[in-house]
Image (tube, rainbow, N blue to C red; front, side):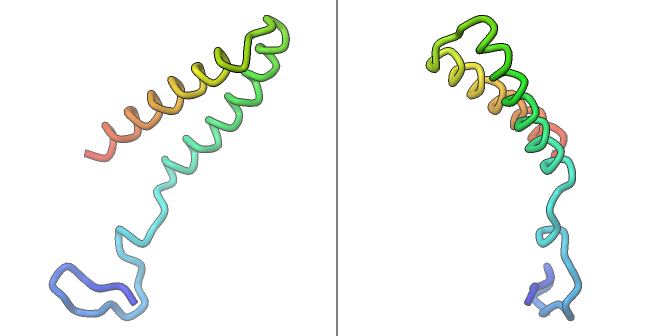
Length: 72
């Protein structure tokens, strides 16, 4: 059961912390789409697995930074 900010138990209503942020869901979807496209590009340019992993890490960090800026 959710607890409100004033300490009362909620009556089954979703609070702000209970909901999944739709922007985060979109970023996860875009990350998977980017990974799929990057895999196609990796095969074309014959990138090593280390280079592929490095590009993915940079992309994920950049997307999380963008998402974090929009939350404030």
